[in-house]
Image 1: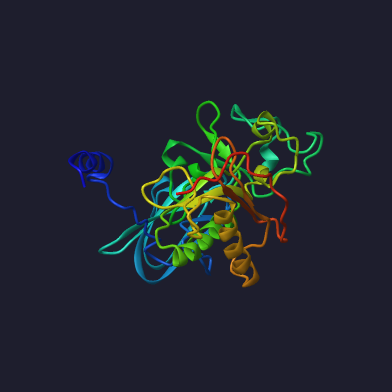
Image 2 (image 1 turned 120 degrees about the vertical axis):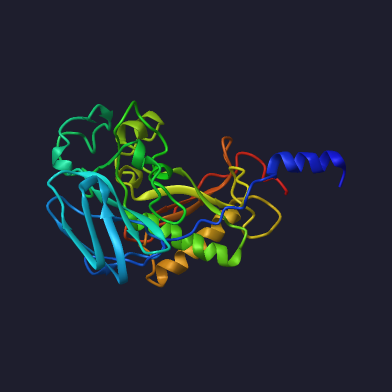
Length: 310
């Protein structure tokens, strides 16, 4: 290797470490239901009594609400307000943060904005029938980049921000679990996989219309769909050659779709739409997955640029 090549390699990668994100340290249960593998977030509701548990005694705290406790179980009563809270569990060696989402009930959404955050109208805006039933998640700078699973944060699913704080989004946590399970299976066959790159998650109706989508019932509006790819390290904003055919092409996306269908058939993830998209002028191939409840596939556009040989 020439001195020039070695110098460039050092400048690009010197001191950098291959990231290997770790999953949750403790497999806790929420109200008796085990948190799904890879997940670090759960939903609760105003006035609910929440009980967290683990097989061993832990130190527990919800700093923003002033709750603390020690033991195999930790219970507390939520106030009547919404919010996004850090829940900390620790033992003598490890500290693990989880995120508790207390959504804003959509009954409180009466105009096309929330605290000046532009949302637009669901459906024709004349009824409340099409509002998200999961409620809106309120995000502030301290929670915007909070990790909600091994590889994903809230910000991964909110690809656009509007104005100041707070920001709002809707997110089906089953989608987060589905992406993590797909990644896990991909990594078994392609060990170089390191990250899930989400290019589109939740979209407000206003933003969806602004980018030219005329449907008012896209699953992106309900936080139940994601467009993404899987890549190795270092990130290069491009899906990896997952099927090892020496090309970056739609078949790398089909590789992900096939794994998804196997997981759905086994009942390990929520069933939904899955389609691989080809190269477009702005970026490479990607995959759409959602949690609509029934299997769906559709014809995607033909390649608009040549598939490069790598």
